[in-house]
Length: 631
Image 1 (tube, rainbow, N blue to C red):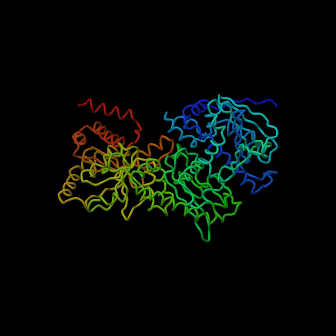
Image 2 (image 1 turned 120 degrees about the horizontal axis):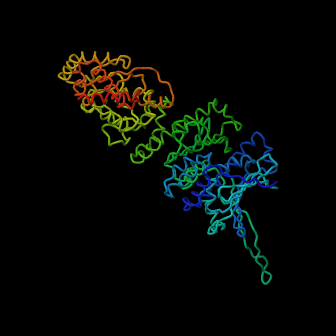
Image 3 (image 1 turned 30 degrees about the vertical axis):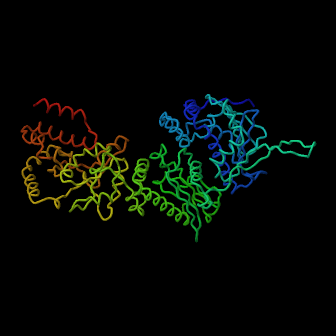
């Protein structure tokens, strides 16, 4: 059968060019990536064989082998794992687009070291082979199949597919090296790289070495050269070893293996639980968030589940809640059945106990990290928005999660999210019994919100929340440490217990004198607002919108409308500041039509200040122009 010639899918040439040039200084990582892929293939076969041991055929051993050929200038990595069919080779190797190529390219910084961190996050680890190879051949036979196929490419935009006769089960990746890459043909160099990056792999990694010995004695002595195969890694699961035996470098290498992250983890926890149920957990917090963290709620890649060192599944979402999807690691149970299915896993009592333990350990890790302000600031910048999903999804841990939250504040330093709720309570004014906050779609919108004016005047701190998840989170959180939360943009704000008697009298007098104006504004805006009131929030702005406690913030309503969602028809309350010159001008207007223009301008300005969307922007401009020209 003639070889099929196919083109890679869109943008592959650009990615391969990046692999060869931008990441060239990190060329040795290709070996780590290919060994990791081979280890995963062996894991998958071992699990599949639990229900069908015929997949092993007459070769039950699972291992990897590295073969160097100096004459052919090639290095081959073979694994006896699950292998790939024709279609799987095309799907897995013929398209990088499945791994998010556009996002990958958009994330590049131009800095070689920084860009190298992106490799595993986008699933392009296999293509790192082209850093050192001028030609890559992948020969694979799927377990249980008699057909083998060879995939080949020089990385220039095309690849070929053809049948491969006599190939063993599993996959061989053969790299024909470029000039100048001869170091990877030296056994000692490859052996050192295996020990550096892949010593923790649970399957033997074999490497051929040449041994020269002298046979015979005296004049009859002669040198005999023979090739031997030795296992160059420890070939034992890292998490099964005692913590005292494991160096930090080994933990870091293992993290890179399971996460395909080029950087080191921020921290980790390794624990063995003994008792009625026995299991081991090895959990890592990454230093950098993956590119799709906030978008990837459905695509889980968290914990690997093993049962008695047998791989079961790669993304055990039942062991980790969605808001902790950035955690990487391994759970190995001695008590779950080996043939456990996803359905059984969801209903297994032991799984619920393991999940509870995993969540507790992760939150404890984060809690310890929070004691170091500088490190936690970096962690929060990467994972804070994801962690904010926790108080909604995990009510049993809500108080513990709220202690980990960090926000910007009117008493803080710019947009830095460094204020904890405990810090806020410690700074509360005498007589203050609530935690005040405002949500917006940006820091600027939050910090400049007209709702903050009276709080700034009275020196009351307000938390500034501008992550998209904040509005959703605060809709499900009622209090912290006995102090209720209160949005400054919703419901009635009662600061009377912090007012003196003269302030109270001035407020009551202002309400009484503004009553005719309030009645006129209410009639002009009938159908647009629930009611019009004198505001006790405003000191500098003419007007603001106030929602009921149950209503969604205006900026979120606007966002959902743009996404095509129908919003409930609730109406806001308009509050006006009778001391503001614009409101006083409106009050003096005797013409009803022009007064209505003033009323709608006050309403539209308040809506825009909240991040809302005008139903008729042209009418707003027309009214404003008319009022400006009438002066």
